[in-house]
Length: 69
Image 1 (cartoon, helix red, strand yellow):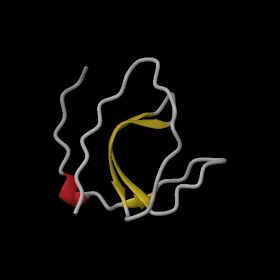
Image 2 (spheres, one colour):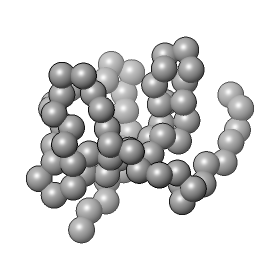
Image 3 (cartoon, rainbow, N blue to C red):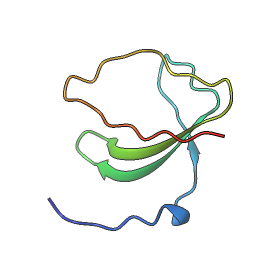
């Protein structure tokens, strides 16, 4: 795996768009991107007050770091 440095201050927040899912109030910053899967492999997410994402499963696991005010 190639090492990389991602400067999150240089990445803009973008609205999360998931087909068939209400993602109002959720923004993301992609840290790594898989061009084959056409998806970020790592990202930061920001949830505005009242925003939520439906319960779902990640068979390979997922780590989340959450911060709020």
